[in-house]
Amino acid sequence: MGLKSGSTFLGDFLRQCGGYAVIDGGLGTELERHGADLNDPLWSAKCLVSSSHLIRRVHLDYLEAGANIIISSSYQATLQGFEAKGISREEGEALLKRSVEIACEARNIYNDRASKGSWDDYYDGTGLKRNPVLVAASVGSYGAYLADGSEYSGIYGDAITVKTLKDFHRRRVQVLANSGADLIAFETTPNKIEAQAYAELLEEEAVSIPAWLSFSSKDGTNVASGDSIAECASIVDSCNEVVGIGINCTSPRYIEGLIQSIRKVTSKPILVYPNSGETYDGEKKEWVASRGVAEEDFVSYVDKWCEAGASLVGGCCRTTPNTIRAISKVLSLRSHRV
Ligand SMILES: [Zn+2]
Image (cartoon, rainbow, N blue to C red):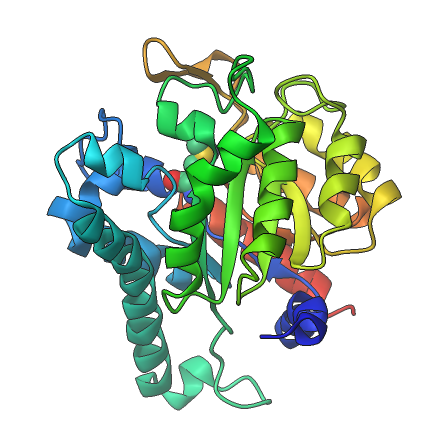
C-alpha cells in the first residue's frame, strides 16, 4: 500500500463501520480466564507455541461480541525473547507470522458463520449483517519484552536510545508487515524515544502496511514516563505511515483528558482501549484490584470519549467480551447518527 492510500486507510474503514469502530478487549486476560498460565517472559505469546486453538477462540469471542479490529498475540513475542528460550530465529519468525494467521483464521470462521446465518438473524435491510474486520499485528514496547512492567514506567535507562530501540524492533516489524495483517498496532508505548523509534523505523523500512500507535499513561497529561502526551502525539502525527494515534492499557478515568490533548495536535483518527482501571504490579506480576472500574462504569464513559474525539474504542487488560459487547452497543447507536 502506497502512502496515499495509507493516509485514507483508517478513514475509509471507519466509514464502512458507520463512523465508529470497535477494537477488541484484553487478549492476555481472556487467555488466562480460559486457564492459560501466562506467567512467563513471553506472556500471551506463550500460547503461540502450545495453545493456538485458545488464541483463535478468544479472537472469535471478541468478533462475536462486535469487534471490528482484532489484535494479534504478538504483543510480547519478540525474536530476542524467543531466542532466550532456545527458539531459533527462523522458528521465531514463523511464530510471529503464526500469530497473525491465527487472527486471520478467526476472521474467516466469523465470516463463514455470518454468511451461513439465518436471513432473519443477519438481514438488516442493507445486506447481510456482518461486521467488517481488520487484523492488527501487535507490537508491544521494549518494556513489554523486559517483562518487568516497564511499559508502565517508561524508564529504560540511559543505555537505551532511539537507535537501540529501532534495532530492537526492526526485524519483528519487518516480519509482521509481511504476515498478512492489515495494519500494525504499536501498543502501550511508554515514552517519547520509543515513539520516535517507531516513526523512524516505519519510514526507514518503507513498511508496506499502515500502523497505529498507542501510549500508556498514569495521569491523564503525560505518557507513562512523564513525557507529555501532546509532544508524543505530535511526533507520531508527523509520520505518514501512522494512520491513528491513541491510548491503551490506561485507566478509563484519564482517557477523556488524554483524547483532548491528542486532538489538539492531530487530525488523524484517535483510538482508545483502556484497561479496567486496576494497576499492574510489575514485581508481583499481578493486577491490583482496588481501584478498578466496574464494567457498567467503563461503558458509561464511551460517549464522552467519542465526544472528545475518539472514533475507535475497545478494551485492554482485564476487559472481556462482555465489555466489548457493551461498547459495541454504544458505538452502533452513535453510528446510526452519523
Ligand atoms: Zn493491557
